[in-house]
Length: 507
Image (tube, rainbow, N blue to C red; front, side):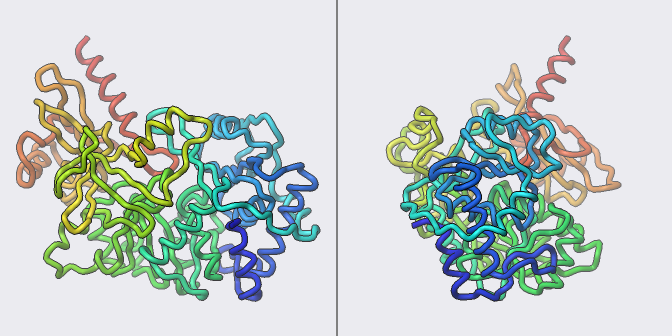
């Protein structure tokens, strides 16, 4: 089934319901949304020469036309290749070429420096032309046909293209309703995170339910704008990275806002530290749901529900709040030892996933596919443990584990300890080469604005909560942590800088 049929059904059921909004301004209803997507599909097929199976890249900032582009591409039977608008033009160009995109839709402000082997078009004129064309009937795609080519963040090398099928998009959306949150026709999705990733993926379930789609006029995540839109609309949900939740809590406190109108925040895409989720919960109340997923199993590995996050009186709440929840409905999750055998409850190993949400493979990368999908399981590369009742706790990426004196030290545990200090705003823990121990623990710390704190104070704080051998051997006070376009901390850059400084000091 072509996922674009969901838009066709929504337009029949709720033709006059507000569909696409810029802030609080309604741009079109569901009948208009369907007509625009259908007209764009006809433009793709008849004027741009796009055939079913062709890839169409979208290098655009968040805007209502983004959804018109997605559904128009699917209606035409083509494959969407959303590219994060925060990427450098060279990075975007590499993805466009690797995907073999025959057409690239790109915002005018992003056009400089983008090189592509095929046609580049500014979306404004194209969408205006498409509105004049009769809608193209939805192409009869099969459930295993490719719908979305998702390029991973590439923090350790070139990004890989994850093949996401129409069936996977449907499964992911149904898991949202089963495991994450309800959606009603009166609700709206607020797109503050990049629509090229999780935020855009969650658009589909909101189309299924005839809900609204709000793009902030700024095109990004402005905390004041976000809070204002939520208040004025009255029932919005958003997907945010943990770093965005952190910023939103600080901004809301400063503005005296309690997040009125904000119904649900689904967070994922990086580590959510206990101090940050407790602060958000204290300020906003029970509005938070956590998901854990990868592009290879989009948004769909585990979920920690609103009730579980808010249930402070549960005897296991302290442990659950630092977990990522339990397996979502369409998958099975296991923790595997290095020899591939299942780990015991509480034992740390690699998180592996099996089910209908797992990708069929990477685009034109059979060796990487075989390595990642070994023996019928998706090997995530993430280290974690599972309790006897199914709660999964992430420790770190396999590459981030620090081995000091022959003992594994998980940076997440040290980071949690440091973030419980009231003067620490952000932290990233890395390993550096040590002739004596193999690796030493180094903490890269961002203090709260205006705060002053010494290494000795942080060391004493760590010693009060974690074992002595886990405490950092060195502290690096930084104005900010380096992050990629998705808000993930670039520990590779921190390790490289630490290596450079160590080498320089040894000369």
